[in-house]
Length: 322
Image (cartoon, rainbow, N blue to C red; front, side, top):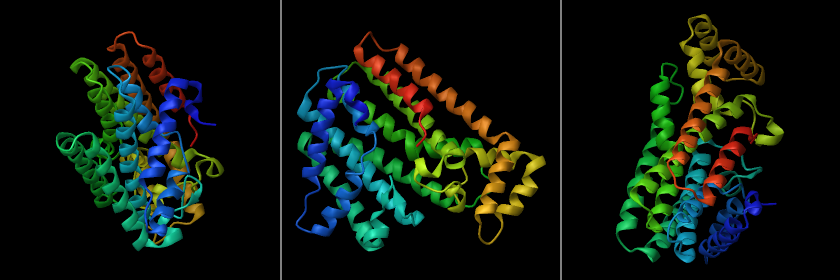
């Protein structure tokens, strides 16, 4: 059952988004269409397109316009996931085999590019100029965030501040973009647009911090990926970076990290070190700060039914386990 079923007005629009997605990825090249549909049909909460719709309903809502934008943003996101899986050599995503694992890296690369092009075509139907430029700038920044993460792999001297900047571009910016684009499409007031954008930025940051925690504390049967996958791939997130800053744990942690390859036992040892150093609690405290920031942004919005929906989403993210 879809998460949005409890909000019929949102679910109705999300159903339209699903139809647009399915129609947009159709291709004469069956393998490209199949590779695209595999990930699209894997589902998920579709938080990003939902944020676009919810934000647009604060203003003059136009269903066709907004659902098309929402679908385009989901395609952008899906394309980045495909490229991420290629870089990480990931075998599964959302519980299904990844495009690069099922079809090979070459087809996966082309599929990601195909989805990017389809997303821009969708946006161009609404606005042939300014919106494409606007979105292109944001997507450029998001890609730069991904590149920064790749460049920082296996870097044990990274700072917390640098890490937060990186996830701002890698994850939070797309959340903020979805809120902003939706509000702008509905001609909301500048104050409303700013508040929704801040909400999205805070939620996106908290979302990534939660992912970082679940990578170390989640149940593999629920998350769909082995514990410590980020560490194995050289992505050192906040809990580990905090541990490396602690002189009482740094030496032992580096001894394990510097091994040629990390076994299941090594990862388990690192998780214990991170917990003992306080890295988990430190990250949870940061996560809570961003939920608080998101709630503060909602206080700036006028009385509207969708404020309650956005507040409910915060609570849902606080307790999510995958």
